[in-house]
Image (cartoon, rainbow, N blue to C red; front, side, top):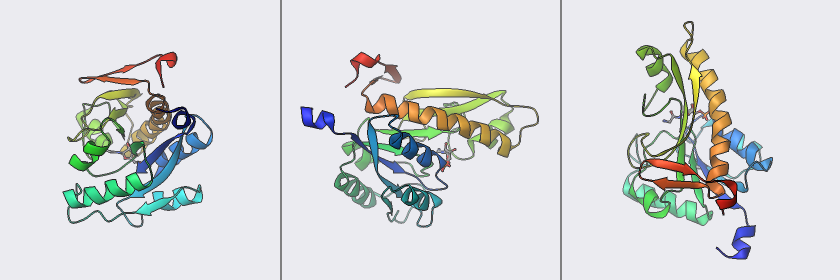
Length: 216
Ligand code: GAR
């Protein structure tokens, strides 16, 4: 990396499908200078997703891209178009924040080890949809939030950071989700900071967190 590149901030894209509280938290964290990166674009597969309006309000470029014919993933031609747009925005890292589709090949060809996700459970428990209800139904005493690298399977890549959240006897999906979301908002900016500072080393399934002086 050249001196000039080093001086430039990393550029992030947030991919989101819904209400966007994590996206907002990450945009705020970048504006506060919590990590040396800026949000170059927020992209949604859902035309009227609230996250798009919220990003615009915060002065961040927000766009809807057509998701194509499938519900749970983007077909290869569509993925290629999304990757083209991400490159046009000169994106370095992709942050999934409530993006409800599994990514496939084109993303990993262009952004290998540069895509991360937040999930509302302590992975590998309760992958997929409605992780908070799954936790309640199973009767676990502790659930939580996980930030992990993304691979081509569902909620399965190497884990960067987790925060446990106690499950209380009187919890409903609403109350548990609320406390998990608070944990998400704490750990996602922390994980992004480590990522953009170059302090995450992936070895197989394990992610080693390097001390500050080893980062880029
Ligand atoms: C968050 O709880 C996030 O962890 C979850 O969607 C919610 C999005 O909320 N993601 C997944 O379940 C991915 N498997 P937000 O739009 O307010 O950030």
